[in-house]
Image 1 (spheres, rainbow, N blue to C red):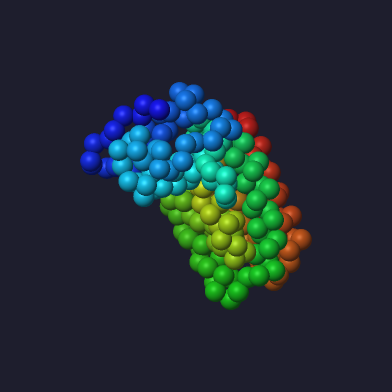
Image 2 (image 1 turned 90 degrees about the horizontal axis):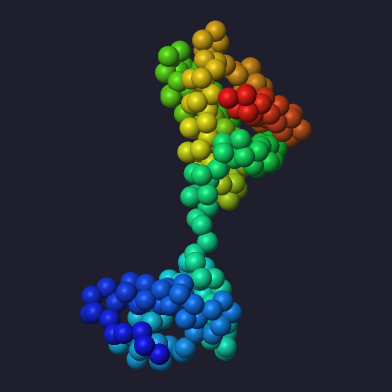
Length: 229
């Protein structure tokens, strides 16, 4: 095995990259077992702790997996694409469809779990949405997303909150295009206010069915507009 000894600086990073290169070029194929820590350490000219950290980094990248008592095996020759990167490339309509699945259920859960503080936050967000200047589309979109984020937050599920946060950059771009291209606020600066008010009211009174129904209708209508662009 000829991996070449490493320089003394940034040994973990260098070891990780060297091992990654040999996985990518087929030295170790998918399903194959890597040499043991001692063999790798000797080949790279580093300590076993450095190799251990490098293998941990490769495992986090989805390239290898350690099997208790068996060794470390190759899972893939390249790291899976990060979720955030995939979302950045996705069409906003595709993201919106997933948003509907996630957020409608989040609204139902929010109606069941909301606290007094959640209700106050929802009313604050609704007021902020209404307060946006007619010509400030960026502020309006930000306030709109913040209101939806407050609904998701009221579900008190950190996974749902994190997932919604991942959607936000794509949603903001799509909604800005929608408001600008269709000039939705020209005749109605508070576009969609009635639907959002009904959503807040449904969550506040704990009406799961209404919260889900109102939000589904609002998102479905917006998705139709996005598809018209």
